[in-house]
Length: 378
Image 1 (cartoon, rainbow, N blue to C red):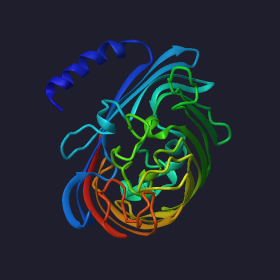
Image 2 (image 1 turned 180 degrees about the vertical axis):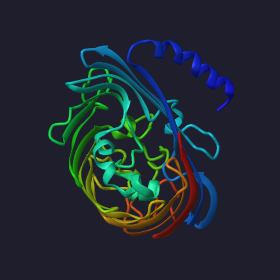
Image 3 (image 1 turned 90 degrees about the vertical axis):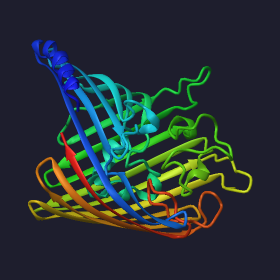
């Protein structure tokens, strides 16, 4: 960061800090690595890539309004460390852009936000612990890795009652004459008691091609979508009128060992068949995952997991493993590896090919990825 930016932050912060019980926090994560993939459209590749968990920075703030009530805001930007390019289809604050109120009643926020699959189920996935996009199941079809966000949304999160929190989210479609077109809504919960935790979530999305997959119009045969939404695992179904996702996860932590289990069901409904491609009008994905993380010693963490997705006409098996070496509380180096094997007929009506999330599809049913990287937080 340039000195002039530090100076600007200092100038802005002085009047904020002079007011009672107000605060602004700047934070971030920079993650970059070198990856090898044995089969990207027929050829192997060694390339500089965004790290396992992406790079981002953000601002979070709160102002005390009295009687336990706070005004809050959250702005978060995603980018690629390798070249500085903005993520989330070029949005400046594509990861988070919200304002809200927080108090004894819970929290009410408005703006661009994560959905309930991320909030309530991501903690049970290998993606968040160690795998990054390598741990996103079958092209992140269930969005547990959080490749899409909910714009124009209102979210409510309850206070904690005996270890239980609940939330709901609603996105206005904004279409004249219709309250249903592009509408998104969902609900979720999390329960924690000692070494055990449990979560569940549900999302319902109308016209997903436009409302979440960054399309500019209703999908047609020639329309393309950004990664990972261009994955043949499910991009043949993006003409669906409705998308429904539900799932549940559980975790147990004992003596440095954490074990997780996660299940999700994703359903594309009222799909428009395409000429020379998908002819299905309904399609579903059932994804099962188990993973574990263990501290070999305070500065070395080993992790492994396996994901299996049973889809309409196809299936995908993907084990993933990794090791983290902690240089400090904020900085670590890591080594990751994964392999995907595909079988059956995919969403495009062709023989299923392996497609590790955020990597170009393989030309056949197998694909291997290895990544070494460095991550630091501030």
